[in-house]
Length: 397
Image 1 (cartoon, rainbow, N blue to C red):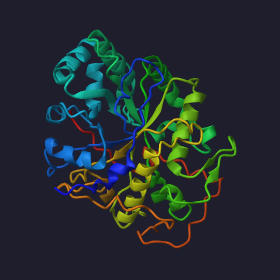
Image 2: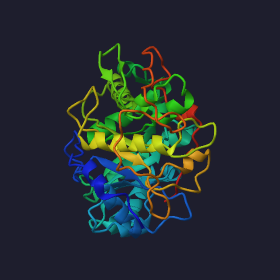
Image 3: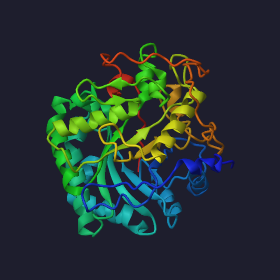
Image 4: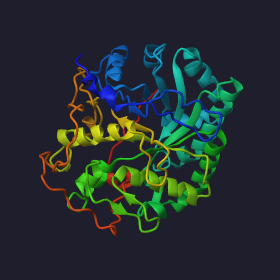
């Protein structure tokens, strides 16, 4: 395999993942950048062959969508910190405390402590789905898992959380005015109380790409790609945003505060990325734009930058994804988010620094920056699973 040049190691420096509550130990590895390791493909290398690729990226945080024993075994003794997933279909069963305890004993405990498991994500984007049974099962399953971990003395080591789509927000622009959807508040508020009590982070899947794809004529590509731009001022807070991802994260923070939780819940970007190829109608899905987005993102996180509302708190980010996954359904972009091709060669060269010119929708360089968005535009921040028509592949344990 030919890993991404080791120059990328310079992009990643030490920034701890700090939790507001004292009991989780999700923060021990020093790197700010993590990566999602999806496996919806029939041509990927073995988990043991993945380790050199992670080393070439300087990454030692990995998020997987199941609790694949082959991955848990391969990562034993490596120091790589794992976040494992509990698929949606398991939630109703694991809402029962006895089932949750059995799952922890059979699925996680045999690999500890050699394999560093820092968190379990219970379901994926459950609250923005349309399965009311899953929505009702979400918090009970999380509570049962946390109780099972506590019974085994593992609750200080392994956090319990869940990942959300930005579709949980009813209002996302301006960030300071963001709020959760009213019909979800009966579920969101108890979740936030659980996070604050247990020290677990609020995970958000945030994709500026979908905003650009939906309205490429109005949305500034430079702003989406972390390139130089005029920025947008939030009229409520007076804060100036130089990139869309920071605005999305701060919108989530504002929604959490509006729901009555002002302290104790950290926001972590559990997925973000940019596709390197797509169908003819998928604006902006080019190799150059993917290189710029992910390269600039990694440099920003390595610099320890926080968002405008929390500048002193380095942002934790998990890039989507490690590989192009050939069996993912949906539009072509779904199969082209990887930093690597299945043979282990880079999908594009992240080590080339971005310059001051941004790329156009077809991936060619532009000498002049695109105009900044009008601050009155609401499509600017609104990126939801309900409107982006993105088909999620749920991975089984």
